[in-house]
Image (cartoon, rainbow, N blue to C red; front, side, top):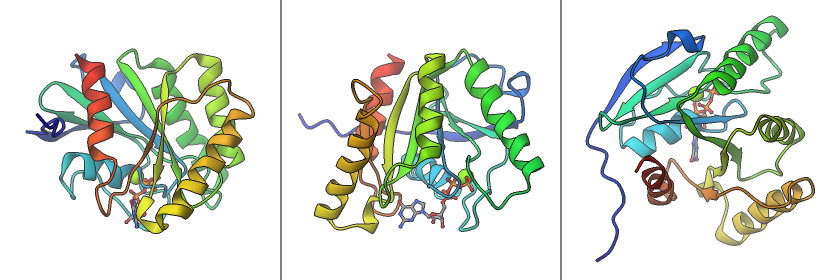
Length: 201
Ligand code: GTP
Ligand code: MG
């Protein structure tokens, strides 16, 4: 039998919070998405759930400013986090967002895996590497997702993904799970959902 992936039968917005005290009270497994502003976090959540309007997306970076929980199949949460590294925001605003991200990541007992998103068109940057290093220091389980896979041809895409993985291997002994996705053509959806499904059972 061909495995067709996890069925998403319901995806419901469950609340926004700036601090973990304010997140939804139900204790269920959480899977969160982080990465530079505009990398495609919110779009990926919409693609995974098959609901283009669930998480708010924007061509302007800095759209998501708080933590948004989405209850999936009444059984687990997808969590949309604000982006890091958006240089154009005023410093005060950036500090505020950094605080929201840090509080969620360090204090969420239900966080099973943090998906770190990287734009597949570019080398993984120093901001991403620094962020990933901090995850290592704090023992936060994470996986890597290369987004916008539709924007490159297959050969260029593979070359770029390999380059970014090689850059990471300069400071890590082994790679975390790696996925390539596109919110436009849906690639990677089954792989990511299958990975999540295995972790909630
Ligand atoms: P912030 O909330 O501002 O941190 O951004 P975000 O990471 O949530 O990005 P968002 O999902 O809002 O997407 C940013 C822009 O990239 C939008 O214009 C999306 O349409 C576009 N985009 C996101 N994913 C993809 C993708 O897989 N392929 C293509 N071609 N465009 C994408
Ligand atoms: Mg967003």
